[in-house]
Length: 467
Image 1 (cartoon, helix red, strand yellow):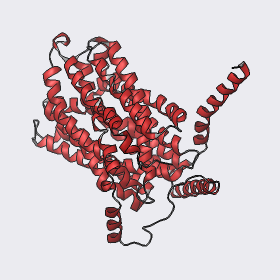
Image 2 (tube, one colour):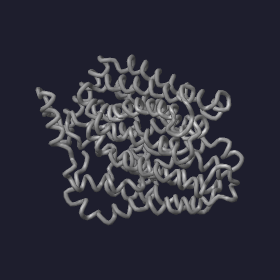
Image 3 (cartoon, rainbow, N blue to C red):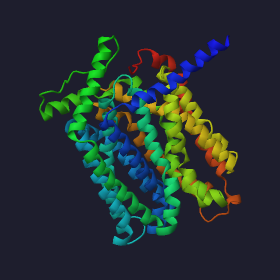
Image 4 (cartoon, rainbow, N blue to C red):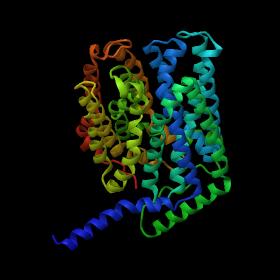
């Protein structure tokens, strides 16, 4: 190979990597609003989640299993809410859905923060029930919020920006999820966990203001027209475009409900297997807030223990950098192949933690797991959004996320027990047995890539691909 040929190949690769970012940078004000709220909500959601189990321990006197289950009610409730409230986005519009959902979440987070002052401590005592009321508001809000984000990306992007649009949305949410690792430790030391929670309430209110002004009705309509024009041009050149016909135009409310029930993909066995086989590897996501914060604060000494929020939220910043690059380099790769490779890369490093709680094993796990996540998670979300018929993106996102509900419920049910048995509080790090805990978690996670490999021939026969 000549030097000139090598140089040309390098320039082509660099252009392929950079061009999607350039195209995305030219997109609409409405999509910019989607990305801004995604990052800020990542900050708020993961910031609260990292401290929530500890907040229930300290402020309400809940034990680990009860605290874990209460956090599980929040995380699992959000996912099940998407199934029932995702259609709200399709019916009332993206802008209104975002404003309503953020208002509900602001109220809910405020109620959770003040719950210890309004009731008696203890499991299922009055303060616990008040906190659950706040969690209900958050669940209702987030059940509308996330489907609205992906419906917005689908609506505001064209053929050149769709893949990178989904990747950037996921990356920016994870960037927001990393920021608590920097913001939370000094804030927590200064004003305590309730003070940190009030900060996140203020951020949520700020999101409402930003959506109101950035995603104005005019900006939304302009973005829709521009994206539709891009898809129309691409279709005239022979490219595949999203479904453009509006099958629900002129339907009554009852007719719409019948239409939704008729088009639920529950009868598609390949689709159902595809989303459910991902549950084992997705337990690692739940362990990011159910296990990693307590593991790093109990099994380590020194810098890691004192700044456990930073290490608990290191995965999101890695995802922020990795996801767009992986999306640019693998955009033409087969979805199913990427799912197998990504889930295997994500599950495998769990066994590294089984070697013991050392700084190098923790960092190796976080880095390799994040690479695997960047390989498959955005592609899965994009696939679900793009196969959805017009006006059904919200409900499809809810159905596609249903296994998350089971993952969060099941993981929350056993994570507290594993912590009590293998990583209990008030125990010297040398006396813990976290190696066994992580080895078992590794065996669970590796089921996903194995299941995808076993079913590959059946899945690829008639398997639906996103455009």
